[in-house]
Image (cartoon, rainbow, N blue to C red; front, side, top):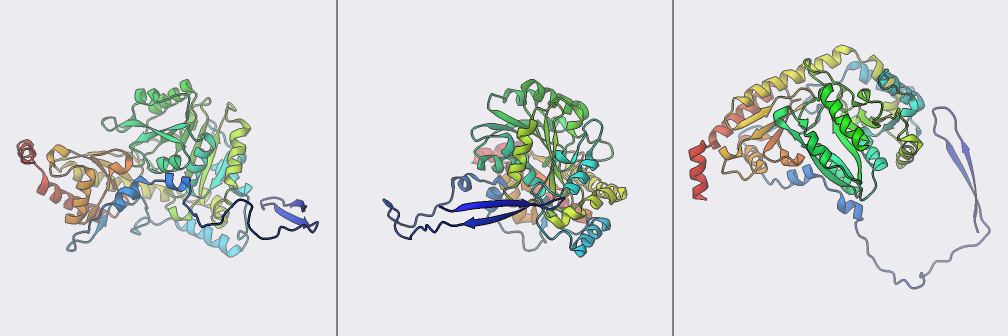
Length: 455
């Protein structure tokens, strides 16, 4: 029999090192056939991989359509603010990373939950009297997507269910189904600026409900919940004893006439795992730096959830160490005017887009209050030649070379989503083409009836 001696060395910010010494007694396993097994090749994809499904990819990849070769393609579909180069990050941000890279001090492995000093920096940045934070309340992750994945994995078991907004970010469903977790969709109300239908939400809760996902500000809606509405959501969670997974990656990205309220600041009794990161507010989605903030002032999560998050983080060795090394400077030295300028551009683009689309017969945009999106309703009765929003957006590509995501991607048919991070002149051109498209295909009440009779 072989025996092992394991010695742990490590201190400070640096990950512990395991020294493993193997002592062999000389026994060996000789190669040969395993008794009762006839060797044969039988390599199959795992059940987890088969259950993993991304609605956006499934719909977009099935759209077999070519843009109009006479018109340059304008994509209003991708939620990446860096695509067109009009929204660069701040010089202080890039300078911080360059200096860390040149220092050579962050080239090794970090603890799976992140360097202690970096966790302290995030805790200090988000700490407030209403929701106090310390370093041990912070888990650093590889982007906000991994933060959401870890939060789901620690809160829910296979066979349980989670409550997810409709329309909502498709990744929630992708991650949940791959983990064997059922998704229950609660409705948002476009006529109420995408507030939650609270009665519908509460009706979905049962004994297997593991958590409620609240995305504020919202992707895909660009909506921002008021303080009073967040308190109503917290009241449901408190009555039903359901913890909240808060996707707050667009936190503080709200327009001047709104105020962003982190949901954990409004309740001491409901435990919250808040997921965020650098991607959107600092305009560096490719840097893959996210975090989970653990808010648990009543000790409902206790050590079990905290320990579970630590163990889950050990499946990979944490986020990029170079960005970790720059994190304190990024958080605390990025000038306020950078955030202000970004929001000014996003609001101006949103206003231009909303005004232009509001003037088009057959479309009903919902005014956004933050983030970088707005949703547009297609009055399908006035476009009877199209079966649904997918067909509508397909033809918009083939005829006008404008690509908007059909909201079927977000479980909300007969809408489409517009990304507002593109340069203003491209938004104006895209809206002009959308108007031309709608005028070409719009049918009044009588025309729509006649077309239906011809089918």
